[in-house]
Amino acid sequence: MSAVRSSIFACAPTTTRGQTVHLDADPKGESILYTNGKSVFIRNIEKPHIAKEYTQHSCNVSVAKYAPSGYYIASGDERGNVRVWDTVGDEQILKLESHAISGRINDIAWDGESKRIIAVGDGREKFGHAFIADSGSSCGEIMGHSKTVNTVAIRQMRPFRAVTGGDDNTLVFSNGVPFVYNKSIQDHTRFVQEVKFSSNGDMFASVGADGKIFIYDGKTGDKLRELSAADRGHSGGIFALSWSPDNTRILTSSADQTAKIWDVETSSAVSTFDLSSQESTFHGQQVGNIWKDNHLLSLSLSGDLNYLDPSTSKTSRVVQGHQKAITAFAISEDKKTLFTGSYDGRVMSWDEDSGIATPLNEASHGNQVMQMVGSGAQLISAGMDDTLRISSRSSLSDVLVISTNTLPKGVSASDDQTIVIATESEIQIIQNGKKMDSLSVGYNATAIAINSQGSVVAIGSQDGKVYVMGLEGTKLSAVHTLVKNRGAISALAFSPEGNLVAAGDSTGKIYVYDVVSGETAIQQWVFHTARVTSISWSPSGQYAVSGSLDTNVYVWSREKPTKKILIANAHALSVSGAVFVDEDRVVSTGADACVKTWKLTHHK
Image (cartoon, rainbow, N blue to C red; front, top):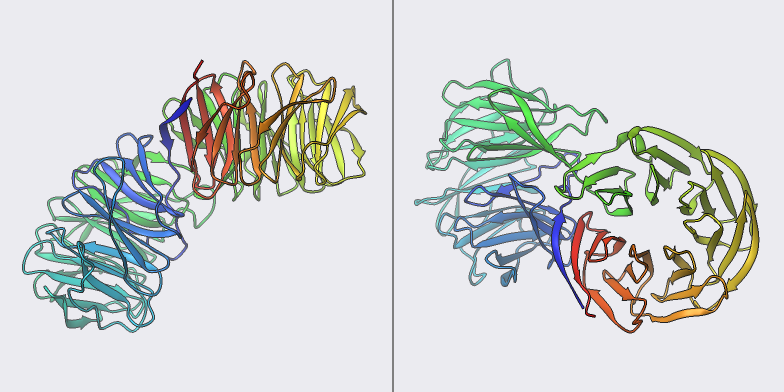
């Protein structure tokens, strides 16, 4: 029995208000490179559903850059570590790890020979480090700054030059190699956010929080002109810039929710893209960009990747995804659409074939989405904002909001769309979109499930017991108390026939009980090492899949309880959901904000 990952529907890049996101692309212009959490993502530009993930950093990654050769990537994290790793093949072999500075790495630059790296950021003794990519040996000093350095660029041909810019409003121009201080440039009046050399090395450009764009000689560092002096400049700070392949134009992205294309020779803006957000006044702020061949991409603070079309001055495509951990997951009845909810309350639908995500703004919550379930033509979600949201799948903008009055611990629905909600002190029953009844319980409820027939409800408790109740109309009556579990019940799932219920607990154990007799049917599913977050049965009921805080997914066999498929480290930090698409395919979600699909091979 085995599992192979078949796709990653990647998360959006991590963004922070007021901070530039330094995006990169591979030398061939096929993939974009960005970070989220502890992971680095390599994502195909033309086909964004094709992605690779690098997960070897021990803390949050802040920036990643391709070597000009395309064979290596250097990625830096919040503790000042830079890892250089191989991009050829799936092994992602580590070439070098260097502790560059004592704080967050804000930007990384390679030289044109793919031999030398400069990493800059928020250090204590120093704000930057220049070193050899093979050995980690020093190849110069990054000096001249008195505050955090935000950006660095290296001229890609000899004679090498390096430019850094920081919160001290200063550009520092260095000769190389080895890299040594040449002069300070103080044209900006606020933070310098990004600098980049043109591909031919003749010029470099800088942008800053003052909304200004300066062009300098690439060899001497002498100022040539200011592009932003014209009336059509940005009205807010500029976070990012990229040169066109022919070095005649520059793409800038700004806090004023626009991106602009500038003609360097005439110092004029020739195109303006309005990327203002419908959600808020700041989600549309543009905090990063790349221009690679014919691809122009600008990154919104919301994490949206906007594909820009210069011929129309409009976006031709927007690629979206979660930025925060996915905390809830459901799948449509036809298995073609996936629904996810995240830590920040955002709800999205995903096309299972293409991996394209669509935000469901009306279905989103004001806080963390706790749980999602599908029931016939409805999508049901419960959130930390103490609401239940019922969306019609035919019109996902048609949302019914029901207050739960207190924090919902779990939600489940039957085929006839009877909804049961567990709060800490009571069970609520909703039918036809109305709260029909509530039952106070003498224990702390932690999870709930209702069978597909709507006749039996299982309630998990903090003391590790599962209370099986019969449901008739809106009345609950006690049937069994199941006591095999030893930890607080964290996940419950009825088999398709409704005769079995699987109960996962905080110790990582899953026990399967016979609902009719109350006896333990399976007790061998005990290999998770942390709280079970999700249990789901296959359509036939012959298999079950579970996810856990231990980052693993297990596929269990009902006929052969000792046989299992382990998907180790399925998601960084934790797995939040796992569901069968069919008998041979599983979809999982996790704290890495990604959706992943897995192809299973069951040994007969």
